[in-house]
Length: 298
Image (cartoon, rainbow, N blue to C red; front, side, top):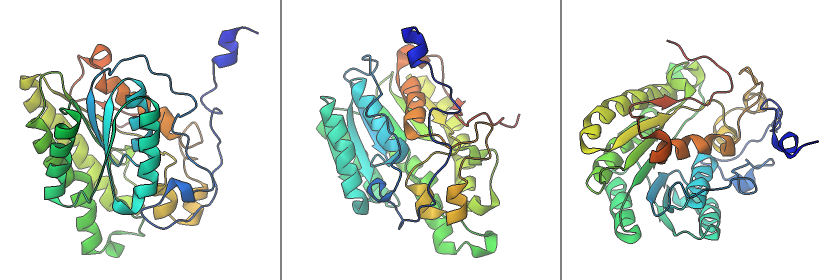
């Protein structure tokens, strides 16, 4: 058997196709999950694609955010992460893997619902890291509900403040620091295109993120700054057992052609692609959709 045969993997089976019916308290910690997500610590190998870059990753404590922070660090970037204070233990783990990669990790807790925090997050990162070259707007809030009538006004407003309004604030702040060649990457979702009524508020914000990304990209390209989005399908992160009922957690990801949820380590390379100008210099206003074989409308 050749080395190539040793390393090539069947995408339908490279990660487990069954998930435990976990139920954890929101916002959810990876340390509380009975099956920890794979964020690439044992497998991701960097090649210097982001050497010397300065990145801000919101929601960087766990899930996709942690996988992105790890990948960026192993590609040579220093990373500031944003997260809720209740997620400090997860954030410390992300900071550890960034530092283990030989890069600077900056932990900046706060609530993205607060416009002042959004600005201070970016300003502090720029000051302490020496600039901001990459902004990843990844943090999100969701709750599964039976329908529109079950979504309280407070929950609806929290979802929009966290998921889309915060992007306006962080991008506005980051653009004051960014130079030509910088990039913004927003996390959208398959929910932007195929909304589940159970996630009505969350899905609506993700549709707004796609629209915001395409609009902002047209403005910022005049300054040499690219804006793109990643729209993942079902991903195994703490958000799932923290916001979905037990039966939905157990079946999570079964609906896609690959018949399984993705792990965060499978999604992080999409962010590296958009962050690295040698890979994606001719991409702006685009959406990359790692969704396990589903077909996007249009």
